[in-house]
Image (cartoon, rainbow, N blue to C red; front, side, top):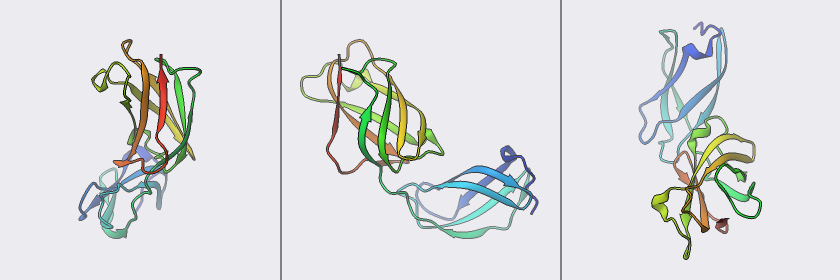
Length: 171
């Protein structure tokens, strides 16, 4: 097959499996090869049929066994000075972040006893990038929020497992 050289015209598709299909983020395209980053959700089955289309030309399907990503682990967090505020940029250190599709990383916060604002106030942390061992997000903190909040993380639907919970203070 001739894939051309325009990555925006190339799609990698998955079928025949169960659960959430893997994603293959196209990184590079040559006339005879497509290089992509494979992201496999935890609930994806282990065998998929894959085909590639390039500007309407479709390859013959082929079978591809896959292995789900390891669950994420956060080993540290930084970016807030004495307390976290709206607009602060957090960096999470750890493993198994999705650096190819940053929106597959979802940072959450749960109030601890004595904090104010409640879950309904919705502290957010919009992921702006991820690399090997680090994830960056920008905090959105409503004015009524204060106290200590526990940080959570999901990557491609897999929750952070193990390790001590990380608690961040808000003014």
